[in-house]
Image (cartoon, rainbow, N blue to C red; front, top):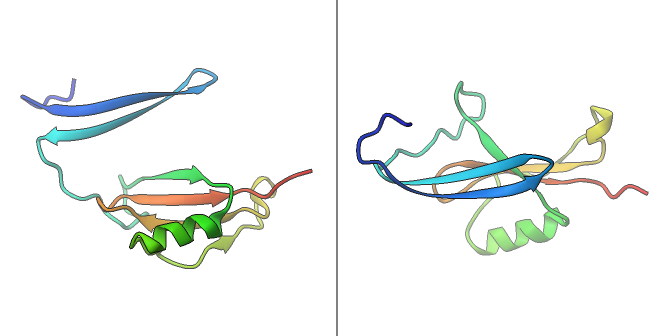
Length: 106
């Protein structure tokens, strides 16, 4: 499927409900190169993870040696995102991770 001879990898399929599946791949062979950290480059990507308490999560990550790229920002537009707080991090493999805390709605 990949066109790579003798590829070796681990995978996990996560059922997200509503017919959505998140497939995670870790290639063992061939060995890859770190992904770009510049989110504006063509072909770059990131994964966003929703967290309940962004400040608490950032504290845990910083104690583990992971520093965010900037302070969290609060979004005002569009309406759907109003009040959400977001921050980008770089994981140990160089991939971009976005943490998102959505406001609690009544």
